[in-house]
Length: 214
Image (cartoon, rainbow, N blue to C red; front, side, top):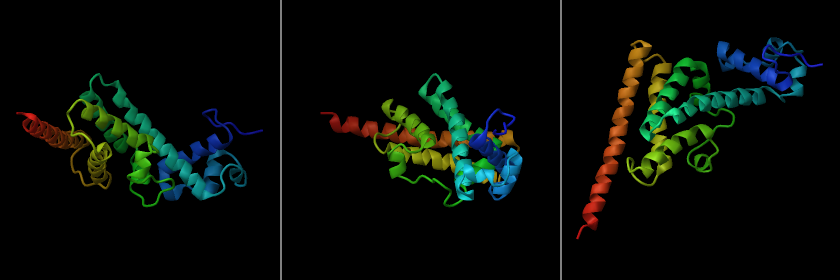
């Protein structure tokens, strides 16, 4: 009979929870088969009935990390306007990185993580649920005429690269301010990026109107 975890999960789910907890406490190097088994309350040999080896267990940790990020980004849907949804998405990204720094480092700052998606094919094929949230916000802005038409994947990549760059600087300790001031700097930086994207769309629209005028 399988041992039940405190969350009521058993078997693979129980081991997955134990691996995630180990990762949160010790980072990726701390996710070891024997330790995860002990944390889950099963024998070291039992873990291999669910995971072929450490690589598969690490892939599970990464998948769970992206699932968590996706839940954060879904907060954007609470916005009533497209600009509110854009701002909420960016705020959620900040919250995810600052509240889950080990998870953030693992899924974004380690080369060749298991299941890593690559631009542009994986994103064009909608293989990344997290990146698709950014694409959806960009698509709304393009439809409304706030961002330039075409290249939505590249614009989404620009947004993500800006958010990621700011949070990577935070993760490695380059911000001397407290969290509230860091958030304020992040918000101002994102607003500057918005202004550049929105201004470009307006300039493009003006050129189009001039070219179409008699």
